[in-house]
Amino acid sequence: MKDILPPESAGWERLRGIAAGFFSAFGYNLSITPIVEKTELFVRSVGEATDVVSKEMYTFTDRGGDSITLRPEGTASIMRAYMNSPEWKGRVFKTWYWGPMFRYERPQKGRYRQFFQFGLEAIGSDSPYVDAELISMLDLFHKKLGIDDIRVELNTLGCPDCRTAYRKELIGYFKKHTAEICEDCSKRLDINPLRLLDCKNRDCAPVIEKSPVILDLICDNCKSHFETVCGVLKSAGVEYNINSRLVRGLDYYNGTVFEFVTGRLGDRQNAVGGGGRYDSLAGQIDGQAVPAVGYAGGIERLLMLLDGSLNIDEKFSVYIAMLDETTLKKYMPLFIALKKGSIDHKPEYLFNDDSYRVTGAKKHLSKANRINARFAIIAGGIEAEKNEIIIKDLKEAREYKIVIETGDIKKAVLSVFNELDSIVSK
Ligand code: AMP
Image (cartoon, rainbow, N blue to C red):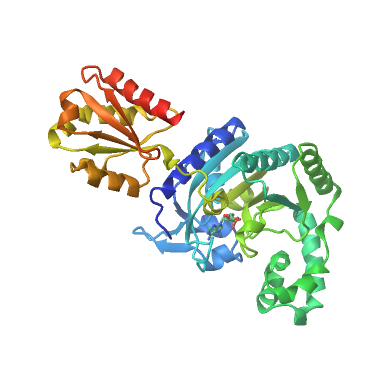
């Protein structure tokens, strides 16, 4: 688990802002659900045999004796919330979320025990066009962020009937090759044979490669759904690769499944996020049949790909260097007004005051250089007497003196911004 402090947190804040605007334009509005749920929700939905439920959940008994779990993923909570909401029942519910998830995994690069996900869910529609729009939207979202070395891996898991037939084929096939598969795969074979397909053990690869492919077995309905999704993606210009080994780690998926992958995160952690249809999840929670499709992406991994490009641009930072307390007191209302004014100003100036310590010009300037400030606002008794301040451009080593109308704070703010703007544009 890690702390996210400034300046790193700026990238998080910006990413959240971009995501909110982008997803709501597509009709996916924000939902906030509790960080804990009853344990049984995840056991029933994510699946008892999955790694997440069997090995990775943070579960505890609360003071009332109920078993509670820190959420390991967001979809089950959103589905529970949808089913609890009389307002949304029976309507198509499109939503997005963002927040911390918890899994007791072995920590490594790009893998944490508390990590953040953003997710999108469209509940109440079985249309393949909703699947296709979701994937296209995510493709555009990544491109908007400037990540273009990312591709979509796509597969279908078919409906429960197709799955039953496929499971049988897989069990039959792998039972003939038990000597060639790893211990984990042997254990999983009877419980969840589909998971063998994404085993990362290299020894299993040759057997997996020759295993039966679901696309050869699915029914006409599932085939036509999948073909519609592929058709829309093709005409929308989304690059995808049909990967018959893509099965996803959680039990509730059926039909369309997909992942956004990149080669830039190393081979074990290549997925930025994944999703698919989960038409049976509502039934597992409370017996109703409600079709749905969704996606969850990892924020840490997305930010790793962005490599600091969303961080605040430090090039317009302004260091406040007051030489004595009387001057500081005089100009303090100006500094407060400048900070407020910078919220709406372009370029965005970042005011750094060093806790309003008063000291000599030399000390101030060496501090300003150390923190890479572009400008310093300097004033002492001589300037204060004439209602002046000095703006020093630390990059060009030039000074500009301006008069401050202390009686008209709006005018004063404007004159500082005008001066800064004119230096920046030189
Ligand atoms: P999943 O819910 O397992 O399909 O995960 C969806 C995405 O969440 C992954 O592709 C990762 O980007 C991210 N993710 C999952 N587990 C972790 C973790 N332990 N640490 C960081 N990111 C994770």
